[in-house]
Length: 253
Image (cartoon, rainbow, N blue to C red; front, side, top):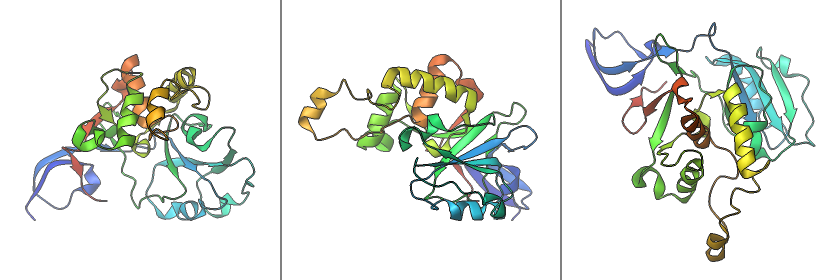
């Protein structure tokens, strides 16, 4: 087509076709391996569940320079990952519950993302960055009744984030966030000071609520939403460019 309408769509150059006239697109820069190394953390619960993801890594266009597989303490470590992928893969045995993987993963690169062994890597992992300043572009969902508060888990996620940043109104999915390792470390130190090393104090002030329900429906550990709320409170959120996913979509890969 001569004209293509990309109104309210976030794109990188790869997404564009042969159009001569483009309407409405917000064009960002793709990942640049010379500027940014990214680790992928994979939360594993049962031995070998992550093998499918690892075996197909080389078939995908992705930014990951290393993979860290978080496994239970009793799980055996693979020594043949190098036969499955050219990407360096290492196993890390957990010293804390699985919901603490965000904080406990030993990361060597400046940035990382997190997923679990029930997912696979997309054919194209299209990380977006602002042109020039090269800030990661991170999607968020507004913390409103329609998008969040009518769902107990989301409502509790925002409530916990507001302990860091009162009035926090953005939900960032854990697997959408590109975490800065140095800032993750600082956030996790503060998170543990507030909630306990394994989150044992997260809901200690909610005993009255527990009298009226069997349990609180909410995250058991740190989240991408709380990480971003902490950044805002510390005045360090400027390393990211956030985009409202309720307003701006993206072209399918």
